[in-house]
Amino acid sequence: MKTMIKKAYCDTPSGQMHYYYGGPADKPPIVFLHQNVSGGKGYLPTLEKLTAEHHCIAPDLPGFGGSFDPPEFDSISSLTEYTLDFIDALGIDKFHTFGNHTGAGMAAEMAGLRPDRVLSCIMVGALLLTEEQAAPYRDEFSGSSGPSHDAEYLKITWDYIYNLGGKLDLDNMNDELSGALRAWKVRGMIYKCVWDYRFDLFIKDVKCPTLLMCAPDDVLYLGHKNTAAAMPQAKVVDLKGTNFEPYFDPDGVSRGVIDFLEENRLS
Image (cartoon, rainbow, N blue to C red; front, side, top):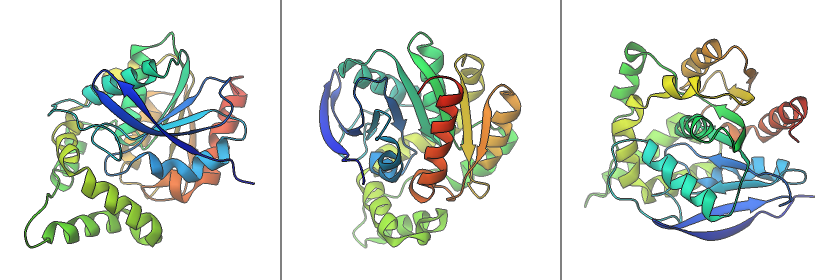
């Protein structure tokens, strides 16, 4: 039987944030931070596997889904601060961070900024790349196509998500497309600065138990491998699901999380 996942809004100093949640609220929550393009909804298959035993919260980051639109920013750290405000507004003290792609960087940054509150750090498709390694990513993931009178941006966005793995499931493809179209402004902001995000500095400050997961066909598998080499204390797990592991491999993701938390006596 699936656990019911609920939706709600939270007032923060900068605006309302929409989020999905479920599970026993007497436990420190796992806060799920999504990748650029997606939204909290992409975590639902994983949340359905975890919320029987674990308190889970998956917000739409600012500019995505039902959350407020932020002013222009030039650092992913702005999204981190907005999300910490959201966590504070919910009255949460200690929590686990779980991040995918851009969200993985935010998860590590939070763990370094709030070491007294972050109990563990879980990253899928971590971002550790050298300047040389990041160059092709800058070229391929460099912006966001916005509305046009000929609607060409619809096809551009469709092809972008389709080729990242959306073709594996058209229901997911439709959700990702609608989310990407809604978030076209903030997606562009993220792509302008994500490859300059100092993930190398953030992981040095991560002192809590760490889990690194990724699918071998994820576009950031190289960043994942680099991160594993830089964090030899971290547990490493391979997944399936191309660039949408929490959606396409909820069994692998949830099993990895459950085992990791039990091994560290954090469940």
